[in-house]
Amino acid sequence: MKMAMGQWRNAGGQKLIGFLTVAMLSLIGFGFFWAAPARSASENQGSYTGVASCAGSTCHSRMDGDGNVVRQDELKIWQEPSSPSGAHSRAWAVLNNNRSRFIARNLGLADAASAPMCLGCHVTNGASANGAVRLDDGVGCESCHGPAGGWIASHYAGVLNAPSVGAEMRAKHMANLQAGLRKLEDPVVRAGVCADCHFGSAKDGQFVNHRMMAAGHPRIGFELDLFSQLQAHHQEDADYGWRKFGAAGARTDHVQMWAVGQATVLERSLDLFRSKRGQDGMFPEFYFLDCHSCHRRIFDQAQPVRTGVDNVGRNLPEGYAPYNDENLIMLAAAARLASPALASELAARTAEFHRAMAVDRAAANQAALALGQTVAKLKAAFAAKSFSSTDAFVLVDAIASRAMTARFTDYAGSQQAVMGVDTLLSSMVSSGQITIGAAAGIRADIDRAYGAVKEPNSYKPAEFQTVFERAVRAIAALK
Image 1: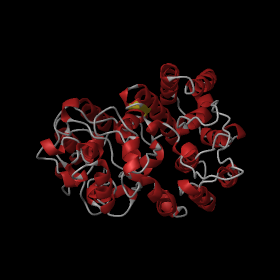
Image 2: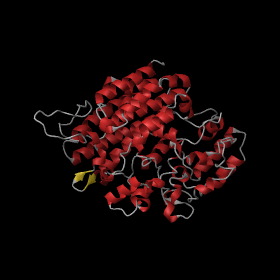
Image 3: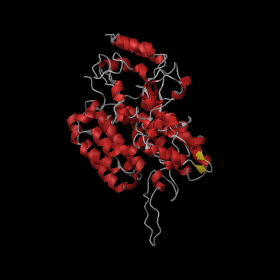
Image 4: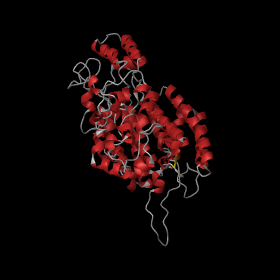
């Protein structure tokens, strides 16, 4: 069946429409953080050939997705003008809108559409130096799949002369990988590629610091598996299984993709925190801190009302800005599935890191290094693990446990919890554990949970926990 990943959500209760219009537009800031990673040609085999090289009715620009091996309407989906699937193609265009011009003025930039600090993520890197790549193509095919100069010919031949033997398909795909095609079916590879722009990297133009957010750039929020599904331009059928995994019917492990994504982003965060990115003049780089621990209304009154909520996961004195631990909370929920020993190590090093944040920069860096080492081991454990059919239910229970929900005191962690439960529900459908109809039956509960994190300024921890727990109970009832 030629169905793009995620279509079950439309069939199962308007998931994509509800999510995008109710919650995601407020999170993506009208397209700002949907840009995919960008890398220079010198870092990869081959050279950039541009989006046009992927076009043609025998390649990826058919009007209908009826190709024998792949859909072949991938460019049409990539260019969709209003849905999440077309956001990459709009990435450069948004640099020319009123909001971008406002941000550029605040940052002292003449033009966001030509500023290196913006182009690092809003176009395919190398666009200005390579005539084959157009700025107005935004984030093109090669931003994710890698410069195609070394592999486009063999890739084209493999699709045009579709072999009937699965082993041949696999061999051709492996040859393309050797020639520079990125192995995006590998969750570690995909997470590393996507995180460059959807979270940040040490490269110039790929880090949204606090100064940019103060100027008006949307805050960064990312969950690998959910974003992958919203951007998917392909279907996972039998020949996909042969090409990518070497077995007919093999599919993406969405639980694994979610877990590896959480670990990758946290590992990246801790590495950047310890680097020069962690300082901004005499101040710490506030990007790494929990925005809403400080961004609350401040006013004088005879009997002050405390607006903060105690967080059992943070051992900090009152008044200290905590580290943004949204991915750390999710990783703590998943760690025991990968390794009970590493789960205990993660808990101990997490506590030490939060304590060190109240000591000094050197102590915080040392604790971040130790915590990052544990996270790296967990990422490897997740990447090597084959998750069972019941693991998604176990993870939902873990995310919704009292030990975890007590840590949902701020907006960022609660947002991750909703996205995590949603992507785990998706994995239950794709694995056949529950039906599309059953998923549609609890869509209203999930949408209410999204509604609770729609607007950060109106976020109320107690109300969120009530709505979130209702959604989780609805999923648990499907066991």
